[in-house]
Amino acid sequence: MKLLDGLELVGYIKERQAKQVRALRQSWRVLPKLAIVQTIDDPVIDMYVRLKKAYGADILIDVDVHKVDQSDALALINQLNADPLVHGIIVQLPLADPSQTDALVNAVEPAKDVDGLGDQATMTPATPMAIDWLLAGYNVVLQGKSIAIVGNGRLVGAPLYRIWSDQGLNVSVFDDTTADLQAAIGGSDVIVTATGVPGLITRSMVKPGAVVVDAGTASESGKIVGDVAPDVRDLDDITITPEKGGVGPLTVAALFDNVMAAARVVADKQGQQDI
Image (cartoon, rainbow, N blue to C red; front, side, top):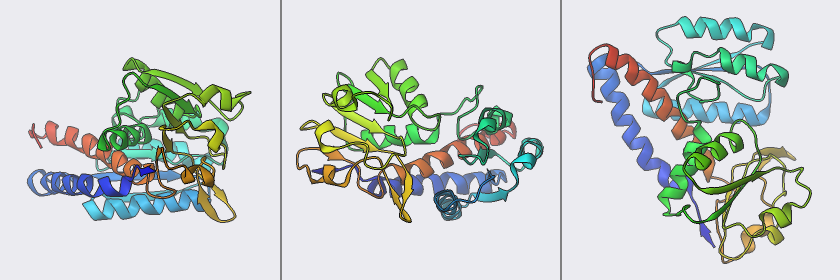
């Protein structure tokens, strides 16, 4: 078994980002800042927010977390949109009331939509970007491969399917309600799963030599788990993300790449053209 270890790659990315942030701060007096709007208390969400704050501190990007009632979220987003010192805004999902997801995500100014989730977004969503980085970092070639995406959510599955389809890749999308998931994905060369259903992907669904990227997250008995059943990793002829440290670290890194891109736009307006 070969591991797709995001932690192995993220150190190089973080080093590059730290140098670019220092240039923004020291040479151009642009202090990159990310604002996180959170409307729900949840151990999984709290963990990811802490990771983002810690990563930002490591590369000198300020991260402000705003925990608010969902009824106050729209007003807060509008306030952050108008604040020139805030370069990136994310609405931490899921919301307490998911029916308002579209309205709140689309309320973020496109230039500050560093999650890339709004209808007018110009930036690539962080997790699809991270998956591309991870596969490229381990020289996994997608052209000519049969690719299955399991999960069609707005954070991972839907944007990843759109990106890869636009590249002309042979990609299909399924979810946890697919009638015969084993038959649907069993012949796939590459499987990317992001449903949040623990153990959904079983050994019988993974063919010899397949590449498996587990981007699913759920809380089970107080532990963060993915979509892949534990015994899948007993297969010795596959390439797969580890239980921890696969896509997650690179997702955080990709998010901050988008924050830096938004801050560079501000630097450009101040006369800097190449940071």
